[in-house]
Image (cartoon, rainbow, N blue to C red):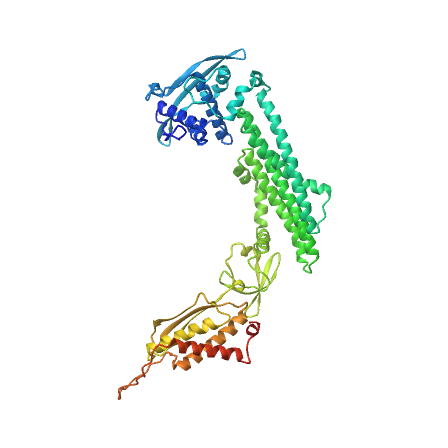
Length: 551
């Protein structure tokens, strides 16, 4: 096994845990960053807040290996496999730091995780690392220990001792780094603000939307704040801050980030609504003038509502309980205005989801069918095919199944042609091929998906399936082309001597040998010629449709 390879997970004994930790940290020191990811599995992090758990465990893993490397080269074979107690101490002593004595220890404790016994570094171990590390500062790394290539560890060796003295809750080095991080974040804040300002002005000018300097600052400031907070939060996780301080910083950053995102969405909404209002003034439809302000107010309400939920989540508040306990008054109001609110949301669904537009042929829940005439705030009006007008509340459209037949690119035609049982197979084959050639030659049929086959034997007929699609824009055009297509089939049937069947009962009294057919061979060329002649007939016909003329 190579020195920088990851070892299999084994935390079953103190020896196994220590070996797993040391091997993975050795891999990390040799440049394999995954080593650190695996090494933190040897720590009990249950007492740490989830928001900082991974960050702090990585800090503890790096500090612990620094301490162990300065104490001695560890021979894992000397570590017991089955100690007599639930806690095994590698080191437990007192150290003198900053004029005071501090109790420190490095220990492993037995835990039960996922029905398995594991040995993990204890919480007391992580709490001891700060003073243990300070007490060993300046001491050389033990013999035969792999030297760390980490930039952070190298920098620590060159820092003067006073930087690790504690002042105002933090080490001096922490205060220095926080100032540097603040300056870096501020620089990126200004860069992003300037970039957004230039881009925003350029885009808005193209759309003839004027922006004052105050409005520009209101738009760009939140983007700068988000950048500042993101960089500040990220860099703070790299400087080994104490747990309490890091939790406070992350929580504050999350709150500021949520507020800034609310500001960004609010300002973007303002810009969009300015553009929509400008467009609405140019239209004759007064509905636009009403809907744009309504959309702005409603969207702003939702932005702030969602933002408050995220802020509460950052504060680790139980938002479910808070939302559930808003009060009887709010529930009563919501129940009283249920239908109104439902219709209002339904109108937003129609406006923004755009399931249909004026003039579309729609089918709603398989019981309402017609042409959309008008979309209002409360209801949508549909002209049925028996010329009545149905008003459908918009609230029902939220969960309705809407089949928009007007947006079909292809219109399906599916039928069965019943022909006489006395028809010979050769005639059936020629007849089917002729229909296929008609479909191929037709200018408004889908050429890549059609089926024409002898498909069944019915009670009174031999059935030929005709399954195809029309590529036409409207129902009128579909009917027109279907009419001509069926006429073509009748002409082909006549030329092939095909008789269409219909339900009858015939009593035969046979006195002669019966009707006989002359032999006929399959002739695709004749079928093509028949289809070609039909094509010539349709193009020279005086009653060609408007679609034919366009082609």
